[in-house]
Length: 231
Image (cartoon, rainbow, N blue to C red; front, top):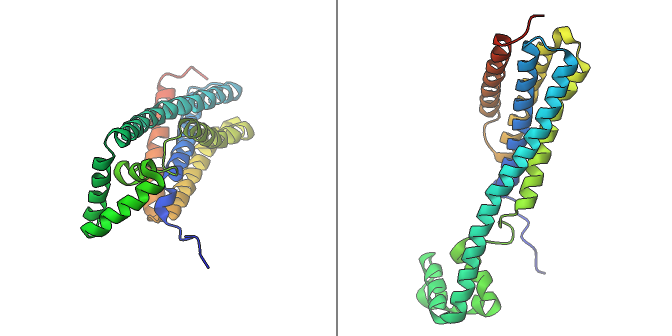
């Protein structure tokens, strides 16, 4: 009975894990920093919340636009390589066969077997074989700009919603320490979860993200206090 390959590797999660963690982390850090900076300027809680919401929308759209442009550039480069490979298969199939066989031979197959494997794979799907083994492109790893933009915007908005919810529910007199503290806790947990999923050190990841996030929030709050209005 034939079995499908079910073994899972951590590297399979690198793409979506990186995008999700980066988006959520940016959402928490930027929004919490914005809230703390505006609050330090002695602005009313309602105005702080409005500024935070505006930051969420602007940040999510910025993440989406940046990710779309970046990944679309990658997709364009991939498509150009695929089109070139398709043309070469039409005009010089023999050379493409030798090229693919040489790739397999460099990976450890003897020359005869490498030629046989190349011949059979090209008979089945010549372009697919060259995409995968020459260009390193597969259907699973191909760039998807719209998907990347949506994932980045969504993860940013989810992250940004956390400090905003705390801002809306916390009394104004203790707004700064509560928003700062809860945001750092959320960031530490996020870093730990990402490290756990990726097989890295949980402690190191949590400390790293907490340190840099605290620095960002502290500097923003200092700027707000420096240019703040009188209470």
